[in-house]
Amino acid sequence: MRQVLTSFLALHWTIVFALLAIICIDGNRGVAGALGVLGVTIESARFVDLENVVVVAPLATALLVVAVLFFWAFVEALINNASNPGADSVARVAFISASGVLSLILVGGAAQGINGLFLVVAVQLAALLASYVAMLAERRALAASDEVEIHATAHSMARAAAHNSLLSLISGRPEPTRKGGR
Image (cartoon, rainbow, N blue to C red; front, top):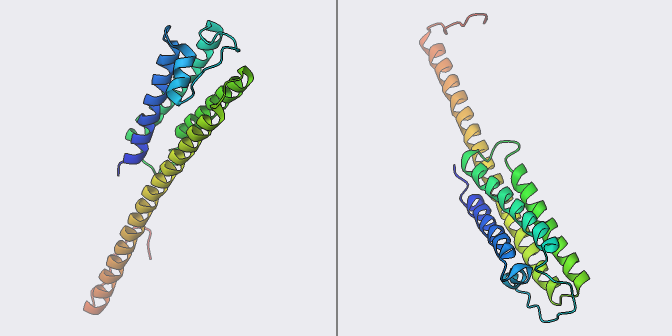
């Protein structure tokens, strides 16, 4: 069974972080444009130049790495089964990385005196957490449905074996013996 919600959320976060990285790299807007997309309006000029390569390059690289991790989680959701033991490891790393980048944006912005950044980052972190919980719920639901199907199959096979054994006892025919059996 396909993981529709997981693949959609992974693709969504891939696009979000890739667009933030592209906006951050853009020479006209830079970090201020990326923060504007998140919802922060930068009005004060008391902090250092946000278009400086020392600020832009690490932030754009970090955003791009997070986008690649979410794309990897998207591809893995399309290819792998939810019942695999390590099925959510890439998604977990992607969400941890995204939370780390957003936390670094919060710390760096607070150090520069950007107002209103805490609420915006808190909303984004809450959205990431809700997405991660939804992905885990879908994976567990799919794994549980696979487990129910396995139990139902095993139950019907056991019932058929008992039925065949009972029929052979009633008819008086001997049960077929297996190699190494009885």
